[in-house]
Length: 330
Image (cartoon, rainbow, N blue to C red; front, side, top):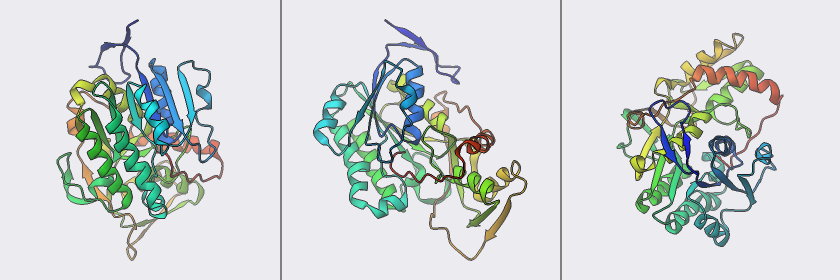
């Protein structure tokens, strides 16, 4: 039976399609748990593979849904993973060792999960299947020029290197889309407190002080639910977007760490901002990113950075004084 789906927030997009079976690896993480909800709400059958390394229960609220399936497993189990890939229409490999510190601590796992998993999926998937890989702006490193999809990669860490290699594998397959995500923020069923906006808001509320190193460094940002909606947009516009890479971020939020801190200070007036001019930031990413390529296809965001800051302030009241360092699933 055909179902008419109108993607929330994308006024120009209306399309008739049949619900598809989606496989998400690492789907119990920060992005995956939100994405699972978004896809289920649009009528997709969603299967998540996750090893639940951190004993998270982020997917438990979806157990009632007959279109939700969960598999306790590891993406490094190639035989099992291949069988799951073959039975789904859309494959979204979110499982990853995320961030510079975690990859440096376990480089073998980083290569196996971040790169080899994606390479295997790219080789196993048929031309009738869709692959959508989330990458990051980290691939660009640092630049004085405005970053577009044509800008050269300059990875500054093993994490970024594995993401570059994984993206190449997907695009070389001829049936994939790569999304180069800005720094993500916002509340999720599985919180990540290490992401810059999430971290700054948390510290503003608990420490009342932010110490900034190289405060002029600029990043682009985007809400986690806008990322989830972007996957939906890609599925529903797959023919037009296939075999392409897209920057995905808030064009209104190419912002320095100092300006971000001042935005937070508007809602946490007791916050003190200290600029340390004598120490370098271990994270040397610094760039302004253009999202025009994706915007030209009718894609829009729904959440502003200001709304995200307000959401985090509200959400952290529920979390108590607990810092969750989950670097496993994006």
